[in-house]
Amino acid sequence: MDQTATTGKMFEYNYHESNPSKLLPFIDELDIWSKIMEKPLEIGAFFTNSLRNDNNPGCFLKPSKKDGRLLLVDFGDSDFNYIDIIEGLRLKHKYSFSKVMEILNAEKFIESEKFVYQKKLLIQKSKEKTQLSIYPESFNYKHQEYCKKLNITSLQLEDDGTTAIKYIRRIKGDRQNIIYPDELSFAFTFPSKHLKIYQPYNTKFKWLSNIDRYDLGQYERLDKSKKSVIVSKGYFDCRLFRNEGFNSFWVQNESMFIPDEKIKELSEEYEDIIYFYDNDRAGIAGSIKNRDYSNTLTNTTKFRCLNLPISLLLEGITDNKDLVLKKSYSQFKETIHELLKV
Image (tube, rainbow, N blue to C red; front, side, top):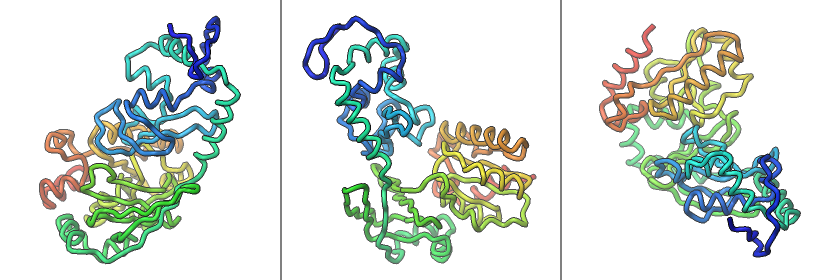
């Protein structure tokens, strides 16, 4: 076993630490994560997850506010969301826990105080929230054609707080940059003034946002006279439900829990609350996890989950929007009313 520390010095390797919380503060986790992902990484920078089939750079590394452990954030697949390098190495190489700990002991820093100080700086940096602002512009013919296929009008988009974008200003800490989005792009604005940017045909940066689990799209517009409500994963799915007369609001992603106070509020206001997420692995897992958590929290059975038929995955259809664009609006309408009939 190589007993050369990352500083280039030699140390006496006569103690094996088996407690991760005592070992990780002295490990260069960023370097190990870069090896796991097979690319140089930076804290907070987006990249694709090489541990799974991933073409959209939506993952990033974030130090835990609790202990500074460098975590992988991957909202696209709950199996890889908020895992540390121990789990990352285990998944990458199919190692046992003891084998992973053996490797990490060999990587242990001698200059531990220096690295602990670096970790404190990373934790401080991670607390800096991203600020997003946009320069809006009128919807062009591409927006109109895209939304016409979905049976969504420009007036509905505007009424929902959705705009087209000329450029985006992104600020985090002392770093600031201007982003010029695709000609076909949408910005969804929440009451908190947080933003979610969506570029349907951008394979690298389809989404950009600074929203959190407290940002619930169209929640303030729910019709409390109705007995049921649908929790959907995105704006277009939500708007499609609403256009068919269903009560619906949307969340950022499937793996994110709605705030407890909102779950309790939904339970008090409605008899039937449906998590309707994508029909892929992440969507089904997310809807089941949210259903179980919500029923446990409220001590009820009011929350349930539904998905489009899994067979549609063979045609590249995971959500309502896909169903309309790849099939037809009439097919979407028929499918949804059949699934949601009481």
